Image (cartoon, rainbow, N blue to C red):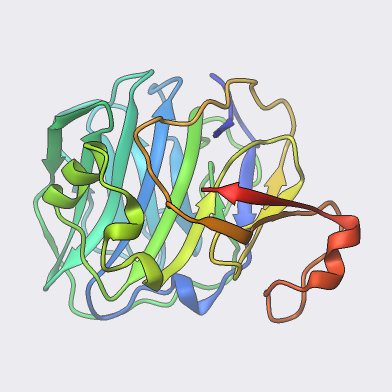
Length: 269
């Protein structure tokens, strides 16, 4: 399933406490997202960390109403995935990656793998350490409510990996049905948030490292996942621990003692 922030939104968003896993390394990395836009008319921020657009050490992945998917790191230039404005109602997979000395926006339609594009590279020669605010999905990270910069649509996955770059061929393979666990980076995920439903206050990401918290009310009821995304072929016992209050150790890991007050879902992911 996938969360649905609906057609109009100002404050519906998900937050994750800032963590070194989310820093930008001075090496290859990627930030992969899977989403569908209900409305493409505003600058909806899909993922954001560190503060406002263009500030030092910030990372932004957002929708530009005219140019489509855009990514920006620090005060460096914007990278646009190309192809013009995104289309409402289409499932996309893409995001931000660094390969070598450049970073890129890249994008693919999940149900039409031939529709893949990548923007021109933006030179990058160092790492960056976002700070000061939680990472947010669905709104720019320095805001708690703003209809101009809130994401209007459905979000199913956010996968962060350090040490590997992502290519257009990788996106095409995923869209064509290659299971994610078959990629070399699967066991190197720093974050894998599967936004299954907005009916819970929060959950642990699939790595068991990061708590994800829901904010705001009025989420939509359309929570159907993209069918082509194959996350795993094996059962996971602690991939999803939903919680209402507390339930997290200081180290962010799983504690079986929480189970009496939590809903632990075991199954195929």
